[in-house]
Each structure stands twice: as C-alpha cells, then as structure tokens.
Image (tube, rainbow, N blue to C red; front, side):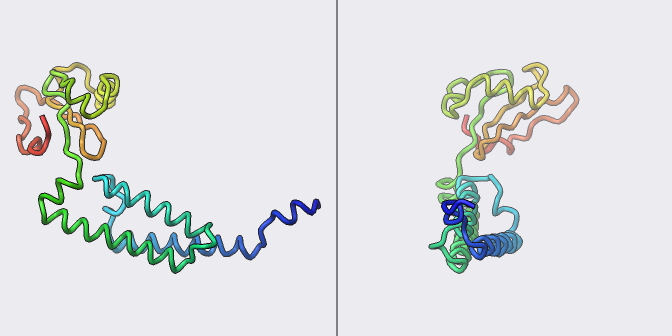
Length: 178
C-alpha cells in the first residue's frame, strides 16, 4: 500500500470514537425530544426552524469535530431544548412576544379573487398559487373560499362548501392579513 494512503487513513480508534459519539448524541436528541415533545421539530415558526437547524448542526459538529467534546455537545443540546421550551412558554403567555416570533398568515385568495398584492408580499407567483390549487384538487376557482399563506410557509386552501354545507367560520381567518 502506498505510504501516502496510510498516512491519510484515520486511526480505527478515531472512527470508533466518531461512531460512539454519534450514537450517544443521537440518543440524547431522542431523549430530549421525548421530554420536550414533538413540537421540538415542528415547522410552526421561525424559531422552530432555527431549532431544527441548530440541532442538526450540533449533532454533526459533535460527531466529527475534534475540538467539540461529547460533553460540549450535550450541554449545547440541552441549552437549545431549554431555550425552545422557555420561548414556547413565553410565546403562549405574552401576545407581543408571539407576534414578534411568528410570521403572520397572509390571504392570497378571497373566494375566486386572487390578491396579487398579497402574492407579492409573500414573494409567490401565480404559478406557485396554481400548483397549490391543483395539489388541493381544486377544479375551478368557484370551489375556493380562501387561500392562506401560513406563517410556516405552507399554503392552505379552504374549499367552498356546497349550497347546503356549512359556511366558513370567521374565527379561522382571525389572524390572517388581508
């Protein structure tokens, strides 16, 4: 075997440590999610997204960086989950904090009418809107009661009920920017 290759191959012990660290930090993530709940990786707000990215980065860094010990990774993980828990509690109790952290949903269609200014605010195109309408099995625009660009980045299509069906509850659109 070429000497150059022998020098570049990491020692088996290093690979074993990477694997062991990976398993331990992975188990710690599972335990933290079980303690904190599934909300830990939901995509309900910007801070949820940041949490997902942070945990992934921490997991990878702890596994492969020689300068980050398992203890550092576990403390970082605990800090992220604790911060998310605190932010969730404050967000539930303080409306101003909730508004500061969460994106407001935007109305994209009001019935058959496309709200083009709101499409621009959401940085969406009519092609994006059409794709979501097709995905929601809309066959004609008269079937649409409302289309909402949610704070999570999802698009919700609320179908118009038949003549005998229930009407849309106004409460469902309370926080939606028109």
